[in-house]
Length: 503
Image (cartoon, rainbow, N blue to C red; front, side, top):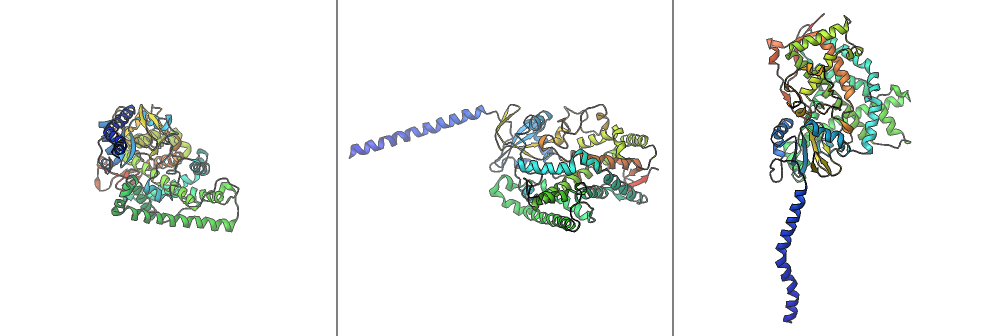
């Protein structure tokens, strides 16, 4: 019996003696494997939250400060999620061109997912056939260069209304920011929805809250078991409330189109607005791509949020910079006067003859990158970027705002100098990675031509028709340029001006 016991216990004792050796061996093997991985530099992280606390209230500023210490390619850990932060044109090109397909996906983020009907919109939809189909529909029927040109009459008509409204002010103080929201919103409403909607101020408030919420970092996105923190912050309540407001608004628009369709029957497709097209695709049983009402609402939401805020903010920033730099304003006014030759307004035929206008817009988008971190990307496979190993599921933030102010690229990087672009081939169309206001690659902004066409026309006519002064004797250089942080960067305070007709 004793011999049997010793026989049985012998392997167990041997194993217990070997256990520490096995643990040490496994650790050595694991460490050796890790050393084979070339990982980007990373700031020290805290337990559980990782580097979440280092994003700060204005992430693009906080991330630039971190990049100055850890380099233009660094790894953060938001909770347990690895996030690559890119702050150089070379690294941005690696992500958006060299490995464009690998990084074509979007991560699922809690707040955007709730506001965009389960990420059914173009901007946040995951990469795949669904995204390709809805992007194609939007481009063909609204955002292609040809379609954008076909909306010229709408843009010029709404610009004329804006000029008339300013002219009626009689030299009193105007809130130009509100006027710019209205003109851009009206253009989008007419081409996408077939009509304008009068309650512009309510819609402006909804858009502001929409962009602000999209820019908030949700703790629950990165640490799911701490999602109750978002509830305590009131994020859940705010998000659900705003989502319902937009949903009700879009439902009313869709119902209007359904009733109109039933009353008038089929019409020429060219006369259809975007909602009509979406409803036709939805009803077409022969189509190999079908979707529900949430998809219709998500695409409408993209048109509004992506078109209104970004466009009016660009015009607002451009005019603000011109007011603060009278020499640049004078030069632009001379250019538009020479091109217009005394006509009542600038038309879109004139724009290509205005190199300084285009330089002003480029310099505005450089200094005031409306979407400073673009939208996040996510790797769909393991990949090596600039010698660093990244695993599948790594998120990527591209700090396009910081790249556009990189002193190694731009002389006097923080100065407003439109003339820097007069003899430069650098443009914002996604082929020059030092200037990426609209992103680049597969997930670049499909509405770029739409936004630029409105911005150029409105800005040219504003400086052609009016001189602008700040109210209450405030000097031009004292104009407050404080930013309102969110997904988009806008002026914190509205642009209040006193217009004077130039002729």
